[in-house]
Image 1 (spheres, rainbow, N blue to C red):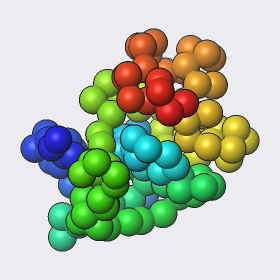
Image 2 (cartoon, rainbow, N blue to C red; image 1 turned 180 degrees about the horizontal axis):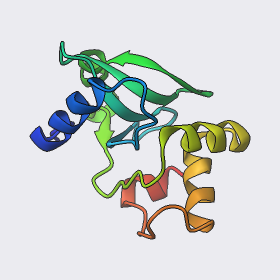
Image 3 (cartoon, rainbow, N blue to C red; image 1 turned 45 degrees about the vertical axis):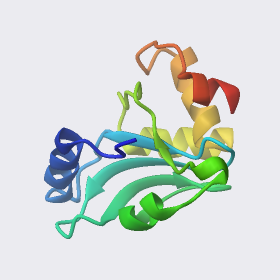
Length: 131
């Protein structure tokens, strides 16, 4: 799977040139086998360091290496995946506050859908199995 389309990369790079803006997440990555969800809002000019909300046990804003994310190897030869149906809809600050209150990005996503703040869409098969 392609983890980042050219359009997403361009959007993230453009956001990275405006670091003091409360951006809407562009892309969601997740571990199909368990903990690990990343909502990326920005990409540094180097093309590797991303900024956004990461949840590998507790949601927090910060930076991570895209190359390292891509290199993660999971059972059955799988890796981290991109949620093809993800729509961020609200700024990263809303995601962060909701995730901290709910305890995880996945729980925050459910709350934001129920409240009508996110576009209604059925969860992807993989996300539904691990929710």
